[in-house]
Length: 80
Image (tube, rainbow, N blue to C red; front, side, top):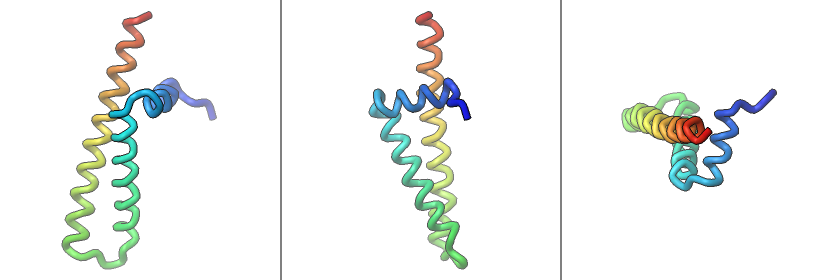
């Protein structure tokens, strides 16, 4: 499978952009915890609330990462 331009840019940002890198780590931590919570047969009320909260946080982080990608794509297109 061919790596898309966006995927390539994300890989570059992981190396060159500390903010993007930290957001990606945070996104991964949320994903890992959500996986743990989804494996519970009978989650408590607190665990259910944590799951909802983490989903919202994960989405917010993904939106921030997307904004960084778009910013870099725009700067690349205006540089050419």
